[in-house]
Length: 254
Length: 254
Image (cartoon, rainbow over all chains, first blue to last red; front, side, top):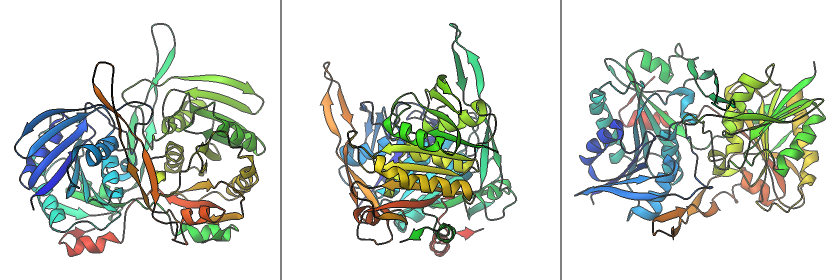
């Protein structure tokens, strides 16, 4: 049977990255794009519960339908699976994101939120990101690597509960490495301003500080050394190693 | 030195749950509440990047300040740490949420999003939830158990990278159990309607289907059997066990 691939992102349906990913996915089967109608960066696994969700078809051609949705990336996946697709897709792809979703950024990422949603639903899901926010950079050089990954996942679906977070660095690519999620933190700098009426407001800004560029198993190390990273990520966030610490603190465990 | 406790939630600064948690935390030191100005359910780890963030002080008394913030629970933690608190807090508490954040719901939860943010920042962080959406239920009976947990964490900070997800079931409590995150899925039912002008929209609805009530290590089992669950959750979402599968698929690993 022809493969069915669902695509979404968090940069919005008009972004360059999702267009490249759509063209790539069309090589493998029928593609349905259900993506936010504008930017939804930093939306994590957020769902829309306080507002109505709109969805409209923007485009159709043989083997490709494109829908724009007013919700979050996670909403897009839920809506696609429940209201748009006629069967469960073989694969969910998210991206290609403009900006890194490696290290701790996976927790804030709307791109990866959609991927986690696919994973919760038991569908093989992969997020693709490019580690630069510079919209002017042509990142078609990543596509052959991403093609390989898509092909592999279609041939051998991912284990339940696991999804892939793929990030490509800037510059010459030496290959692909499976690695672990790096550690890091955002040093926030809230930009404080006043409205014309004097009311104070803030813009969230700041910069990411990697703490794992020297950790030779991490995605940050991979990027620094010219490799595309694949981090297998899980939706079971239990820390099983913490059970012992908690037992020592006097808790009973199941 | 006097303990400093930061409190937030996702039901909004006016919710009953955060008032109960604030009263409880005051027993242990100085409390600063920075919480959303309204409901932010299902906001996960979302951050606000496309809109300005407002924040205003609602109340002050000795050892207690309360602020309302226009952002997400994660924004509240970031803003508190960067713009409001005069030092790093000893503890971050989130909740008490009206509604379960156990099992897979931890991924969508704004309550737990704030807790993960605290954990990323290296601060001991705990989320408290009550497994019923019924606002009429008096859940003060949970407070003695939550008091014990707060006291323990203040005495013995959590290991870096780990935070706690505490959920209390309805009914008579038999005790507290440390357990693992259950599995489950939401069966979405989008409620489809038309605006007066005919434009179609959807409300996200549906019901949670637990797949782990019979798994005797899971939070869902704990609740079914009258126990408050504590799941130690991690911010490193790497699935280390998947490395082998990926190696077998022909990938190189770091």
